[in-house]
Image 1 (cartoon, rainbow, N blue to C red):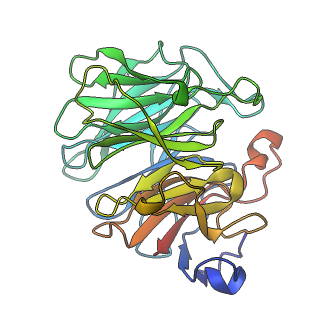
Image 2 (cartoon, rainbow, N blue to C red):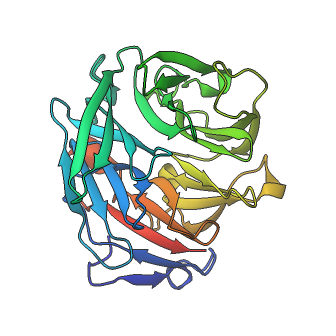
Length: 325
């Protein structure tokens, strides 16, 4: 990892083969923190879930700041997915027990929570429901202007729809491209999920793809034919530029940020930051747009190297990286 005194590193100075993009790094999260997912607050700060601890952090990405512990969830070992609702400064958070030594979830341990903030800025957290039918919830997105969230089950290979008002949980989408690969050893199928430009996008870690299908998110059951937009990518999560359709991929297994332009859908992502042997983005897990900066600035969660979580020999703290495109 970089010494903490280094804040800004032009990636091209370190790795000439990639684009000349500036990468700004926050201070480390506590050692052993596997930062899993991100959401943006109206202030521009980022909310970050930690899967190895039941913690939710807030990070001011406008300065070289220390992550602030915002909330500790009870009766769970970690927090994974997070999604911003259409209601201002309200979020939904997934929690559950997952072993990084055996790479298996604890059945029946997952739940969904509602997070809001009081007038004085104090977090208000309420558990909405257990998610016993979902083997291993991971990525999640709120459907705009509805009570629904869509939740990826990366072990079961389904996408579920949860009604945050009635608490009803149903299967929303079932497709071969969602399934984990049983020969891969570790079962990680559908992972990240997004809605953009009339399509539902999803990544599959085992199948090493990002795909999409026409959708609004309001369907009770999604049917149709999926289209692969990126392949040969050791992907965790991703983000879509809602204007251009360009796809930015957090390639955890490649220590890289990959790019697939809209006119190059159906191809392997081009590495634009990091890559094998690089320490710029060690095992990135999620990507969101910075405030008012779609298409210009990304916030990426970086774990500091994934191997440390199953060996428990910790070598570097997680960070957030601000990438100016």
